[in-house]
Length: 405
Image: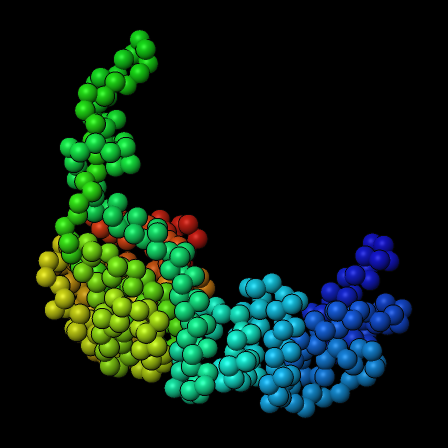
């Protein structure tokens, strides 16, 4: 390794290990200063959250000192830190650092000053923090907070809405054909299969005698979809994704959508879901206890045609209520013909801690319990509406890199 390569490697280790390793790494570099001006600012931004020392400024002074105030109570200082973080790091890293700033340093100033909050990079974890602390956000900051939440909601809607709508309409249109010709509505699979007998071997051409098209018109409220969402703190990302997806379902005339959130009490968010997902998110109360059985009981009257009902429980299954009654209700729902799924997580972050014993009991009744990322949800919904084996579908999603029990 050349001297330059070794020096660059020492720089990287200095940024990773922080000020405490400065003297030793500097000695290894022959007494040379390791960080230039820009890297010193980057180190200072990281040190504000992850170091117990003063930051990169000690690099040039050659001494260590105990950090006394971190980012302190100064809004200008916090605003500068936010600007530095966004300048030096990619957006996904910025999200992590912001979350750590709140969790490790208690920097709720991020939420209390409009000027500061406006510089925050909005993401799903920041939305979760805003929702969890919504009762403490000052009046002067609420509009800015709603703007941040709206930005994240719009981004998720744009990312998922098309695929979910296409999955639902495609699943409900399957095997329903119309005599009206339309290339965009052509059912190629059925057309080819039913015209194989007209294959011309000599010319190696399939000459269809009849074409088949998907039916454009769909009956209103053809299926009932129920999202039963656990509001406990560990489910924050899942709550947000599920709520937004519920709004997408509510926009489809072929679905009768119900969105319910629960802790020890049950909140029916179906009306807010159909109107504005941002209002719905601010109606959620993250944290608290858990009574899953109570919420499932509340949802039962929504089931009018079990064979045309999809019930999705989104929970880590830590039941604080009557677990035996919950198991009986879930088993009875499944036996009646309802398509029942338990998502241990609906997020990009994998499956959190969950009650593995209860999950296994539910799986034994044919209720798959697994984690799913939002981008795989359209496939899951389409399979459920088409009557596919849900256990096999869950296994396929798990095999694609998702965690299951």
